[in-house]
Length: 184
Image 1: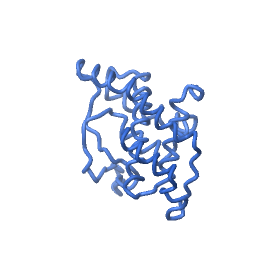
Image 2 (image 1 turned 90 degrees about the horizontal axis):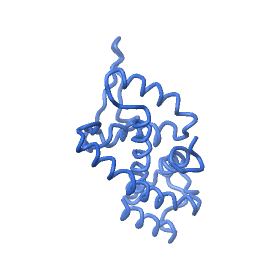
Image 3 (image 1 turned 180 degrees about the horizontal axis):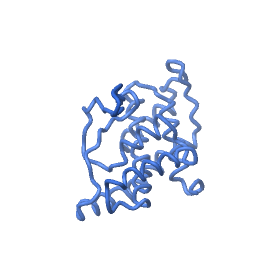
């Protein structure tokens, strides 16, 4: 992630990243570039410790989709309205909130105050089936997943997919969920 960030930042500062791409405007503020370094530090402090603890206790590590966005979801027209996920090329091990953060923070709503009712409802439904997964742990996992997903947007930009909206949503989610001055 750090290597991806350094490449991105170097290109951004050198003016190699376009200011407009397919009608998407690149208006990132210099101080917000630093959020990626803050996210790296946050992940170094929290993620390794968390995964190590989970691994040794055998809790809450799961298989994640790895690229969950609205285009990868389908709702059937049958009475049960079943939801199906497609595009399972990026399947890997991770936190159970990684796909959730990608779908919600990067595509639907990054702002904590606006998405919190949906997260609360999601947790309520999840806890009907998953036991011994406290709400505080769920929210902490979601925060870590937001920080990790910020670098998904950077990898896209580094590969020539300049989705500035998704990058900016990841920054907004990081601001409202993780940065100390925004914690509610």
